[in-house]
Image (cartoon, rainbow, N blue to C red):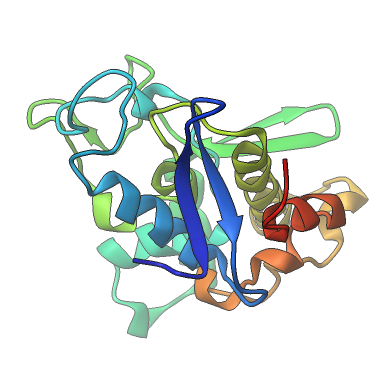
Length: 210
């Protein structure tokens, strides 16, 4: 159980909420807290008693960061033979890149049924489960508090901002600014406080919050 990041059911509002108990809590520890919660049979799920065989979340948009793609890449490649150009070609093949004016969105590609390309329909499982992205690991098939959703969103957005220059050329200047994801290859090396807005950080760490 992760003590630095606590996820618990809020009876008053009928949703899962998140609290951060350590200023050095990392993105990886947020992931682990979510996984620990949903590994328990008593965890509340909106549609089924178990996640096995359900692809509801796999049919959602799945944004990715460079760290997410590196985790997946490592499943299929020998990292001792790492090559940045090969990684970029591979990433362009598995990810879907969309431009909306000056904005760029990078998500995992989907199949003909608009379900994640890594979902194995015949077995009802994810083929990259042990390396699935942050967005998948922190998706709760249950109501989430505004704080929870905002924390998740801020991590995802910053990860996308860092990834875009690695895959795209001629991007807006905002994507060229360095952030907490720059030159980092693991979520264990990124503190949540370095991602959160000051307002959100106060809410997540104030044990008296309403």
